[in-house]
Length: 295
Image 1 (tube, rainbow, N blue to C red):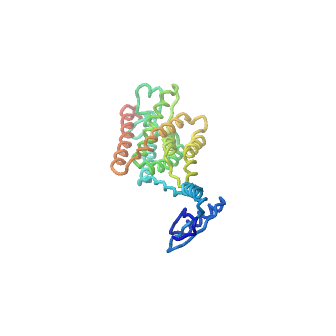
Image 2 (image 1 turned 135 degrees about the horizontal axis):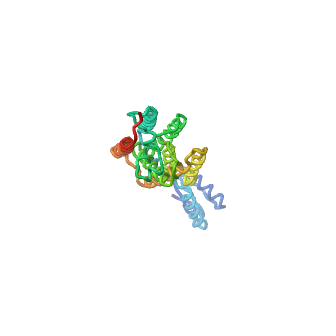
Image 3 (image 1 turned 90 degrees about the horizontal axis):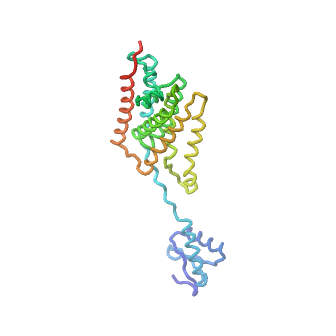
């Protein structure tokens, strides 16, 4: 390109807008510049004396305004709603069986979390207590919140892996709670699972489209989950706050590795779902086999 002597090209582009933007940058820095257009190509020129500084400033501008890579959104799994329906159905069926003493068995006495009996070897109580409830309101609350948080966990971790994580975290929380429970105290309810699901969601790596949002999400999801834990996990004197906190902690810790190794869809999810059902069935089989009959 033929130019006046002493003028140096510092930027060129087939897009006029790109040259206009950089001309404004140089203008703001008191660097005189001219733009020439030849054969569909736009060039920005400055004097030879200003060329080194102009080139440096344009490099800084390009660096600060380089396109940000769009974060890859995590794959959301299918099957979350049927899995939540299965969770709700299991709780309702066990509630009916317990209220009717199905099989002439004392479902409540055999399955409630009793610390003394757990320490005496009745390990299944850490499992079965998760499916027992004091009354219909207790059951409805745990079905509702459990289905909500469980559905979200199943969407990000998979229906099988998500619910297996929730169940295992809840069992661990119940076991720790039972081991520390004073004699004469009992605990029951799926609320431990509700907060295990909330803990798993708290540490999930949520995607964000901007740098500001990414910075906020580094701790935002954990803070929000802790607020929900404090709001929903504390109640009257009958609320087992320790179980709720332990469930939240166990769910968070078990979900941390899944940030790096997210569960795949397909056979792995089906295997996890089968393990979750088998674990629950094993707990109740052991409870009913050793439980007392009710006439």
